[in-house]
Image (tube, rainbow, N blue to C red):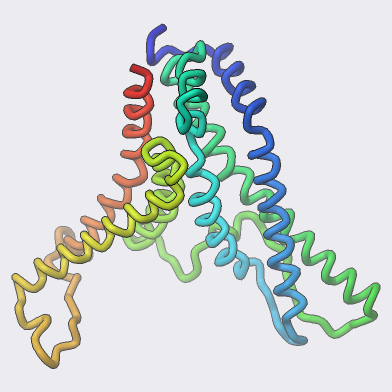
Length: 274
């Protein structure tokens, strides 16, 4: 079988296989996200005071926190069958090409959770509002209550005070890169991916910042002189008008971290198939 061949019949059977083995993971994971969202917001509502206002855009800080949690502890569970020798042999000998196994993992372990998450978050958050007002109005007889707007899905992805400049695309790329890197960590680090990949990211960031500071010291020793404020100018030099070199490098690195893991993950799976 060609490693890059695709058959819809084999893909369908592979999805059925994955679902038969790991349906509890998907079902309990979805239920868990719903209950966490519902419980967190219901707790928040009962700890607010009269005159407090919660707008639709106020949900997104919690939403992105949950997004990071899902990426680290959910998306990192990619290629779970390759973590034990017995299940690894069974998985690698399945009648499906490398590309088919890769695409099914991308769909089930990366795209599906990130698609289902905002829907489940929306349901849990909005149900908590209904339950809160029901308890306060109908059971406790209270009328003076905080003003709480329900969440709108489109507002979940809204970044406050953001304009579509290069800084926005760096921030957006950082958000997108997290689940993609965690997906890569699942096949590289196995069951310890949820710890090892964040650690690897942190080490890389420290190395990058360290190199930047060392180069700044070499170019301008007064930056770290006694009495200085350790401030480093990142606005110069400019590659283009209004685009400093440092910012451009950050943009390239961030979006490389978005796309490169897809290629590396496929090559790693192909290596295991050999």
